[in-house]
Length: 207
Image (cartoon, rainbow, N blue to C red; front, side, top):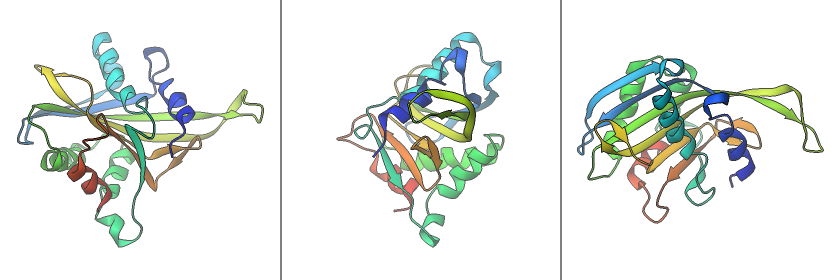
């Protein structure tokens, strides 16, 4: 189960004044799952409007209704994990989006498994959160417990030329659990919990 307070703590670092992202990359996809163009840019180089819109896309994933729209899933162990997207997502996180070849593989896998009748975008964010120490009384203290490095992915229908609408699918990896990184798990977002992206989820989890 996802702790709502953990997600709210994380989203407080997804504002223009307290931005935790260093880079954003993405692709614009046609209805058949082929990309019509990609980008990869340092977050600080975005224009003010682009920054605001990008943060809204990223924040929508952890801010979603926990344990309804946003649910936690565990990757399999051993050889089965190698068949999941865990190795790819781990590599993308570790290089902080600075490898377009890895991102191209991600876009291709999403394109092969995402079910839609609309053109859409895939945005991927590289974030880092220096988790502050929290006392037993719930008060914040000086210093940090660990640095949480993560990626957020949001998949959104296009409502204009290269203009993403509200995300319909996405994920946070590694999971942010008990105010700590859990690389054995991933938090997956489906806007409509009654109609989930089954094929893509199975691909991510190696099922």
